[in-house]
Amino acid sequence: MTTELVSRQARVLSVGDTTYLDYGAILEKREGYGPQGNGGNGLLLHSALAVDPDQGQPLGLLWQKLWNREHRAKPPANETRQQKKQRRAEARKAKRARPFEEKESYRWVEAMMTLEQTVAPSTRVIHVFDREGDIAEVFDQVNELSHTGVVVRAAHNRSLDHDPNRLWEKLEAQPITAYHVVDLPATKTRKARKANLAVRFCRVQLRSPARLGTDSQLHVYAVYANEVDCPEGEESVSWMLLTSEPVITVEQALTILRWYGYRWHVEIRQPQYPHSHLPLYAEVA
View 1 (cartoon, rainbow, N blue to C red):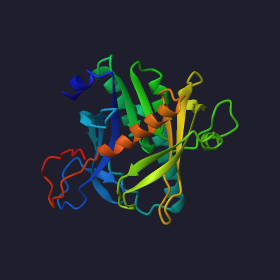
View 2: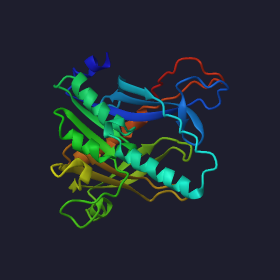
View 3: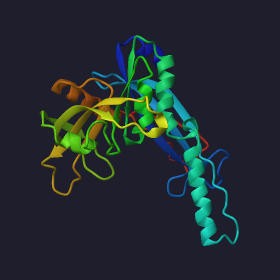
View 4: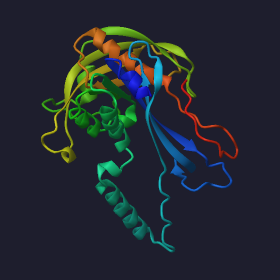
């Protein structure tokens, strides 16, 4: 098992990623599928891939979760505009009131809690999340776990405690400590290229939302990497990475950047069959 393999190491990365398995083109929609995206129909698969922190070598899957969304109830016939507005407002209120454990975003914390229990305490598991994982509960939960850390790409320009600046403004005011070149893989919207990143870092305390209570202390280190001399016509790279791991030297900041780059090692695909009744599979790129 992968958990046994990584338990022999002092430290391992767990790269988290969610894949939308869209079977909207299937003529006979199988039971258990649900809505997703823009008219899609299928399943959601969240994976935690173990990656060697020094070489970036994938080691195997640590955990997966598969689920489907429920179809929305059809609106009442002859619904007025006011009734529609009220129905949607009530639905939003009910959605916000759901326990965190019942929300899709719980998968990020669930992966952390599961691997805390299944991987040996002698191994520190550092979860690497993209912007979907930027939720306050992730940073709150890591404080409760003994051998778990996180590296999360920030999606929100959060308020800070004891500081008038928000997250981005705080990091933009820090001095550039290094320049670092990364290889960007090709995507649907860009060609593969090298990017020269200006690196800044400092320690911050994120303001805890009221839902977490007054005792929550969200201390993290922020590493901000912003591309300089971006080629004309290309979108510049800008990463704001929040981590539980100490970043007090340039070498530590560059390590966080390298770990985040290992996210590209995991890619989940579904078989492209017109009537897909075959098992799903996970392909490690």
